[in-house]
Amino acid sequence: MTGTRIAALGHYQPAKVLTNDDLAALVDTSDAWITSRVGIRTRHVAGEDEPVDELAAHAGAKALAAAGLTPADIDMVLVATSTAIDRSPNTAARVAARLGMGSPAVMDLNVVCAGFTHALALADHTVRAGSAARVLVIGADKMAAVADWTDRTTCVLVGDGAGAAVVVATGPGEEPGIGPVLWGSVPEMGNAVRIEGSPPVFAQEGQSVYRWATTQLPPIARQVCERAGVTPEELAAVVLHQANLRIIEPVAQKIGAINAVIARDVIESGNTSAASIPLALSKLVARGEVQSGAPALLFGFGGNLSYAGQVIRCP
Image (tube, rainbow, N blue to C red; front, side):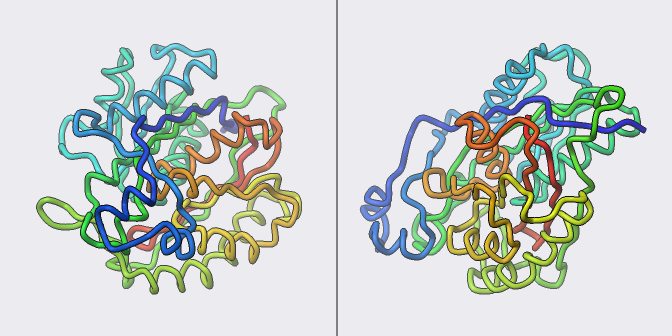
């Protein structure tokens, strides 16, 4: 079995930006109320004519270009999303069609906010097993389409976007660039974050999620580092699911990554669910805030009260 690495990243966000002041015109809220509670200032919102697969395809195309690959080079497309409207064709198939791919395996994963780190682990396992050589992994969600715009506790959180990674096999003698995954869930609390109904609507038990995330997740994240043979102090970056700044900052502090850049893309992008980790990571790399080969902790959590994390080496 060979190792794997992330060859390149890409991200995409819709052009329309919704500010806190814009939201104050819709519901009983204010910029001060939103920033003090969740730390978000802006979020990007897709139009009705911008489906999830379009967001995903834009991010995927950028990742392919950055990797120096063509769509025909990809053996598998994995898309993590919980906001696709149609059951079939799935989002991955539509992305493959948009990008003009040959005959890749195409699969969607619905693990909500932890979707990308689950999909990245599956790509890693697939390449290690020899079932694919190059996998396009995308996290994409259109959370604005499932928001309750009358509920100020949830509509202020959400944004739309996509992030992508190209996973390839490592060369002879090359160290693996994707560490072992640690994943799990809390089934009895799965209803704390939900997208239910017809039409589907996003809702959550905010305080329950906050307590779980800030108390239960830091020791699990430290175990992710242990599995990768990296101490928290050695991390160059920590990219948690961009749920809420009041969750990100205390969790990062409790992990003990005192030398790491902490991704805070939630401030400008809001909670983009499965897109949040690859979106934030791609931006860090694009801005040169982390060096190529530097270790970064990726840790997704949220819907189903699922979690999944791994330490990767930045492309």
